[in-house]
Each structure stands twice: as C-alpha cells, then as structure tokens.
Length: 216
Image (cartoon, rainbow, N blue to C red; front, side, top):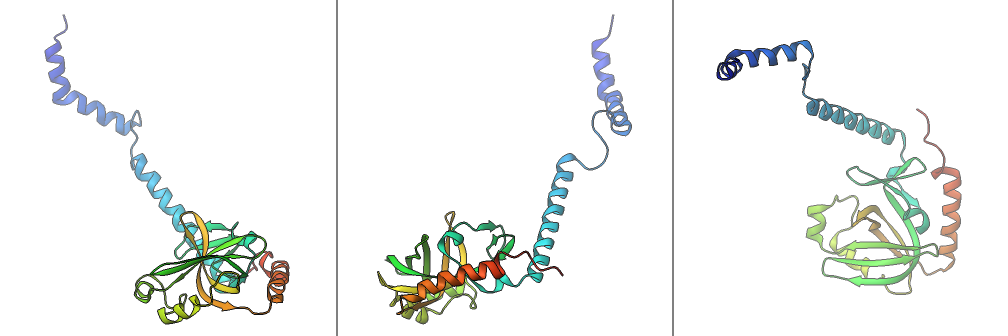
C-alpha cells in the first residue's frame, strides 16, 4: 500500500522543487526568460518610443503646426486629436495646432477668470475661451500662446453679441470637444471680411493644407 504521508514529505523535501526546475529548464509548462507581462510592457514602451520619434520627425519636416491655419467651423470641429503634449490635431495627414476663424458672436458667457463665447461662421459654431486671470495664465500657459491679463480684458470688451470677430489661438480639447484658446480677438467692421475668409479657407486647403507632407 502506498505511504501517502511519506510521498507528500518527499514532494515537499526535494522532489517537487526538482520537477519545477526540470519543467523550467526543459521548456515544459513555464518558459525561461522574462515573464509575459514584462515582455508585453517592454513591447508597448518600444512602440510608444517609436511613435514619439516618428511624430517628432514629422513635425521637423512640416511647419504647418507653427502657424494659425485658416479654417471653417465644419473643418475645425472634425479634426482628429493626437495624444501629444501640447495638444495637436490631424487634418489630411498634416499636424495642426493653431487656427484662425472669422464669424459672428452668437453666445457670450463672462466669468471671473475667463470669457467663453461662440463664433458662428455659417458652417457651424466654434467654442472659444479667452482667459482673463493673469496669474492663471502665468501658472498654466506658455507666454507665447496667450495674452497677458490686461490685453485679455481689452479683447473681452469687443466680444459682444452680433459682432463680427477674427479669432486666433491654440486648438485645445475640453470635455471631449474642440475649442480655441484665444490669443488674438479682433473686431472686423467690414462684413465682406467673412466672405473673404471663406474664400481664403478654400484656397489654402487646395494649395497647402490638403497637400501631402513634403518629402525630406
């Protein structure tokens, strides 16, 4: 009859560790080398690094992300966001980060630290935000993309319902929606400026924005 107690004692004492060692070395069961979770994490990090390197190379070849791209609301609000810092977006394979829009103010919401308003250009309504708190700007934004508090207060005075404005600024995401963090807000007194902006948007899209990335 099998001595169960003796068998278990042998397993604890040396037989079981020996079997595990044999399994590891011979490739049965668990395999030698790095654990699966470590390999998966390393592969993910490698892909992320390669993606960041590819994105940096693309930016060095394309200067479109440095300028304020003339866009209509229909184009601006359908941009594809990139997971980069600072935020950037894709249009026809080209990276854009700043925009210029022209339209009529149809909504205005003034708060202590910011002014939120909607600009309607005939193809859609573009959410815009103008930060008014100078301390907030210094703590959370770069000086080359936002006005000072004093300039922002002066700009906010021209944002009135029914006025025609030209707005330039960085494209950002807020609660899953695209909006413009305004840098410049200019009152346009000539109504023909809006039509001219439409024509410029069409022309620039055809001659520049929709063209493939220039080769090195």
